[in-house]
Amino acid sequence: MPDWQVVKRLPQAEAWSGIPADAVTVSVERLEDFTAGIAITFYTLPGDEDYVYADLGTATAHYSLGSVGTYNYRKPEDLSAAGVSAFNSRILKITGGLGANLALSSYYKIDEAGVPAGILLVDTGHTREADIDRDGTAEVISAHGTPMTAYVYRWHDGYAEEAYINDALQADSVVLREDLIFEASDLGESEVTEYRFTPEGLTRQHP
Image 1 (cartoon, one colour):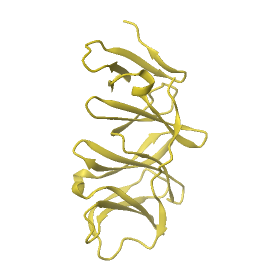
Image 2: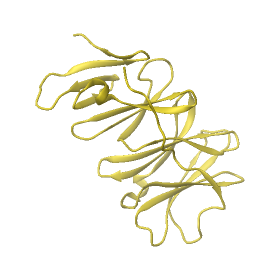
Image 3: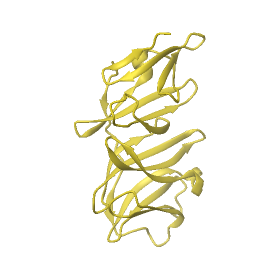
Image 4: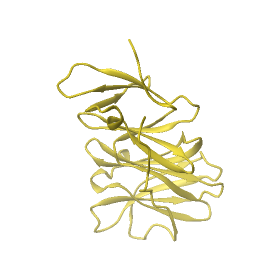
């Protein structure tokens, strides 16, 4: 059974007057996925070579989303904003770069007025949304590294929780296949064991 832990680091979302006048806009993405149309503006600040930032704008207000990636990954193709289905909701996902093969994914719930609330921050790898336990609600899954590490994030009792799948399976490497089966293996070993993720836990698949 995975050891679920409440995710304590959440993305920032604060009302403010808007992007500073001297900011340099990288790109703007307009989303119609929510009741209130929103625009996400990615930008950098003069003298700040550490981070890329984002602003969420509605017809009547602006919200600072803080840093959403590192300065080295400040090209438009390094940054994205999209509405995704996860945690039984339509939520906003913002993705920025942290390293050569590492992303930062920030998730926000958006209310009918377009007001964002940060619910999940993932810096453990590249993320995807999928109904991994096949209960009708998509979770968030992240994977990164060599050997591969895997995390699953779920919504439970009003909070996001995470489970480190390598620990749960006591495996050096855990890979999630396209058919949502985990492959667990240890360094130096050729044997691969398959597991299915269910609401009750991880179930070993027998050939």
